[in-house]
Length: 440
Image: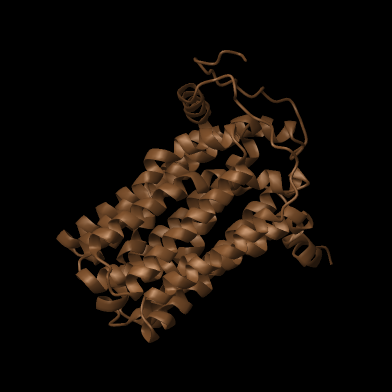
């Protein structure tokens, strides 16, 4: 009986007890289906127009490079200003970008340089949206104990949309072309904007008002990289983003050239990865404790890395679907474990800046991985590129695993302080020195 109750709907969906989070959950799910449709349509459009692996990587680079450059500053922005208003603004700008893209494609006036510009614009918008959304989660839930569950549910709606969006996109592209995917994505933003405007939030007091932005940014980096657990989690995530997640830019080539498929093949492959990630997210939503997440990071990364190597050898569509499911499960387990651990141990007054650095490692490193994958694929082929990616992820996981005992020793006092585990005779949490802190 106890085992059944541990995975009951009340446990899995406990963060939905908070009204604001329920609104966000519903609106975001609809919007994310459209987002995934646009991601698939964009990659297929670029490959259809250019037949170039390099340009696939280059446009991916243009879309994400602003994440690398702006996300740390966006984290400062999220710690200083009203996060709710920032998210409403970023979602509105993303809607405008999708509608412009739809108009250009549907009128048959789209050009490659326009794709670069629009991808770069959306990347700049996402640079402010991602860390702010990560830091805003805690403001939407009424009970802080529900934070890990809310993070897991965020992953579940992201990957639930990843399951449906690519499959729908594949069908829409095959029947009508890419333009209607962009149009539907633009319309889908209305749902999340309405949900955000319907929230009832406490007054968001100004934060960090006595310090300049550069000082705040420096403090954020000093805090994140001065505390060994946060530093190692972020570095592991950066390795996965650089060498592992870049496989997505090669998916049109895998679908069309290795598996001899069409847009529907691409949609189903990405959808299978989404199914694996959704399973992982639902598993995390059913967990009652954060204990044990540290060791899951290297195990999950190794599973995903092995999946990339196996995918490079597959020529069977159904077997590739299975491998994509495993890859999606592995990467989502690694990323959700990382997000949950960081959000659990980070100080509230530095949450925005740390999540900005986290987002930079998660999303900001991706453009360099996309560019690298495109270059390698054009030189040594997509198969060898996948193998190199998988081996690199596994190597990073081995290094992280060797550091786990030291990380546990530093995290344990925080868990005792927050009541996650009972207290015994333990060493105090080491203080992170912030050289530029004025003490205000």
